[in-house]
Structures are given as C-alpha cells and as structure tokens.
Image 1 (cartoon, rainbow, N blue to C red):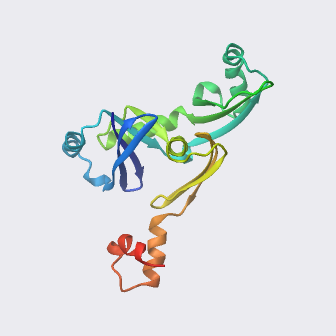
Image 2: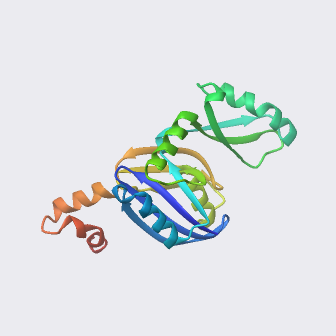
Image 3: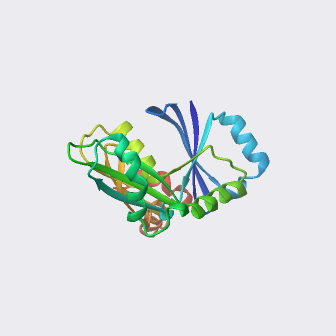
Length: 219
C-alpha cells in the first residue's frame, strides 16, 4: 500500500508518503505545501504524481480527549456488554455526541485496562469540512496521539511506557505511549518556527529561508 498522510497547520499542509503494510512501513517522502496551492486541479495532479492507495488526515489534537479506564472484567463478552455504559459515565458529554476509539491493554487476571481516544462529532465534521475546502477527501481520519503510538510500535522496540515529543511548525505535542497505545498527551504553542526565529535573532545575517538547513550546522 501507499499512503498519502496529511496534517494541516495554519497555512500549510504537512505531507508524508508511506509505503508498506499497516504494521510495517517505510517513509518515502516528507514535504510541506502552502494551503493556497490546493486548488481542485492541483490536488488532481498531486494524486496523479504520488499515486496513493489510501489518504489519511490528522485531526487537530486540541479536539481530542484521552481517558483511561480500569474495568473488573477480563472476558471479551462481558467487556462488550458493559463498555458503552462505562464510557458514558466517564465522559462529561452524552455518548451520542461523541465518537471514540478503544485501545485494549493486555488484561490481567483481575481487570482490563483501557485507553479511550474521544472526539465530539461536531469537531470531526469541522475537520472534514476543512479538508473539503482544500479539495481533499481522506479515506481515514487519524490523530497525532494515534500516529505517535503507531510510530513507537514500529520504530522503537521497548516493552515499557515511553515519552515522545513531536515538534510541529508552530504547535507541538508530547505523548506517553505504552506498547503503541496513547495513554496521555499534551499540546502547546511552540515548534520549529520559534526555534528558527530564536536562531535568526542569534544569527541575524542569515536569511530566515535558509535557517532550516543552517540549523543543523549550529552547535
């Protein structure tokens, strides 16, 4: 398979081209494009050039909520019956207004630990509308915490919880990942743009356009 993965941040679209299987893939390309480029004809040419078999977009992490639950059930049938009720009692919103993804940790003899990734339906609709305005039609809507979980499981061979920091352009995210499952995450205003801005203050003679390559040469 060949994925076209999209992440919108302000006036740019971060793009990754991935190839392989969902459990084993390689990153072929990473690049960024201005949202102003995304006309209907431009997107057709982008698809024609990259030939993706699937298109994935990442929803804004500020629209998400991660919840952890501990249930005194270990059998799958029992979990399926009580899970919707347990989820609803743990949320401050009516269940019918939300969508959620369940991550099951390995159950012990006494209980099952669950991590929930929750989003309001209206936030998902807003994201899809944003994609539509750019003439994009994703097959899958994912999230930064899920992507970091997949990244950790694929590239970091650790059997214990790990802490990952993703530096975006102007917004960044850190996440606690346990065996590929997002447990907690936090976002903040900060990223590569501000690092380059600080570097430019220190090296004012360097063109801001060249700082991304110049940064690797500075101690």
